[in-house]
Amino acid sequence: MNNNNSQLATFAAGCFWGVEEAFRKIPGVKSTMVGYTGGQFKDPQYHDVCSDKTGHAEAVQVEFDSSQVSYEKLLDVFWKIHDPTTLYRQGPDIGSQYRSMIAFHDAEQETIAKKSKDAMEKSGKFKNKIVTEIVPAPEFYKAEEYHQKYYMKIGGGSCYMPSME
Image 1 (cartoon, helix red, strand yellow):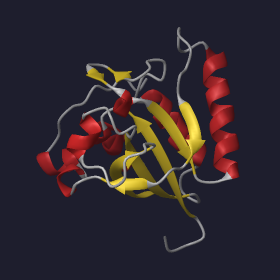
Image 2: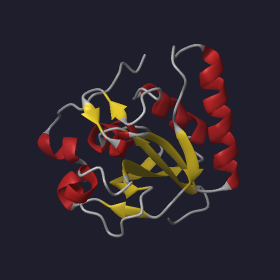
Image 3: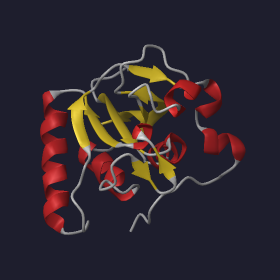
């Protein structure tokens, strides 16, 4: 990161291809990287994570310029692109690797994430309880190159993504 406004945010919200694509398109997002985080297995590969035995979630690490886009805006997108009420599931994808998680990088992000989750719970938008984990950012392992910007490489595609309305 090369300036004082550059920050990292890490989110898990199901299949990382679609999650990355949603964040990649936001003005102020400088870069995205898909990978694995939150588990106990060192240097996981995709086949390891898909076994649902590593404890890792498919996640996206977002580098953003906070003078152009706020962490709150990224959280707004996070809540819109997945169902945070389903434990270990997003649409047809089942397993702990598809869980909902916000991994904060500092105390300010932790406070903002918790307030955002509380606001979402109180909003009535979701009929069921939000199960999103909010945790200190654990080690992030970059996924294999063929997963990076996957939808951009193949010219589109779809993962399960609820309406962003």
